[in-house]
Length: 206
Image 1 (cartoon, rainbow, N blue to C red):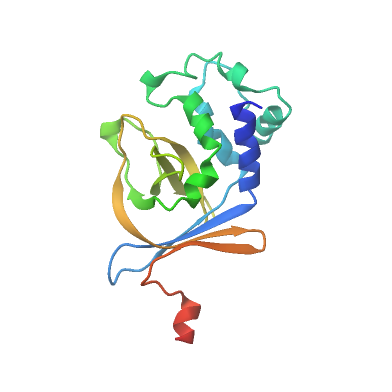
Image 2: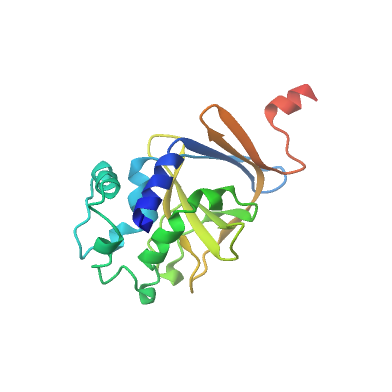
């Protein structure tokens, strides 16, 4: 099975999952809550397929996933693009797709920081995001960037871009992670809790 198909299979599983991050900007400042979920429309930008504009890739997100799952769209077809495996562009799409297969591992990682992202013109990036996650997989020392933006007409957030760190460094305003939870169906897993954090239920009971 090629990387594109594996990425699609893993992403469809993630669509059943949500993450909740509670962040602090510092003492006496209000906590910020980031509820991250996944919808079909996110997949196109997670892979960076919009950069492969010299080949025909469906813009309809459900059609895109359908073509990948049936094998009509695969690694071999994407390799026909001159931008697919080009490090000079700063966004090697082949590498990006391969890493996206581990997106859940990156989000679950203990090596995980969050910042408020600001558009960085010196990096010549057009990424528009609200938060930036910097993390590493347990089995790798390679840093990975995940950019989050609030969805229109909803309180949840989605991933607008993600890729391994290359020669460019991204940053933002520091936030302290107070709680990281993962919801999968009926189950709720607490992945991280700051020693000083108590949620509202605990405050009432104490």
